[in-house]
Length: 77
Image (cartoon, rainbow, N blue to C red):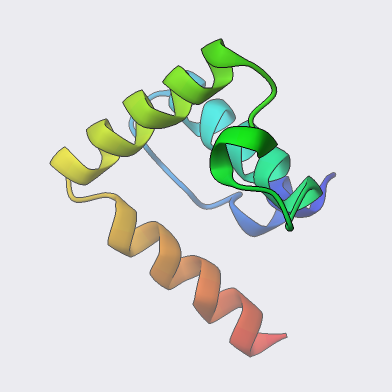
């Protein structure tokens, strides 16, 4: 299990594909921490997927709970 899978295992975006996309996005970003989001994305499709996912999550109010869980898990370690 990758770090992103472990940290985001409790994320529930209402669709397994969105959960998988979120994990891939985070994996891409943390694998290149010194790069911009655009540069860390694998390609245009990945960047568009990131924008679409973040917009949808924001609209549904899902961003804050996911990051709250994420930061809580870090503090507990």
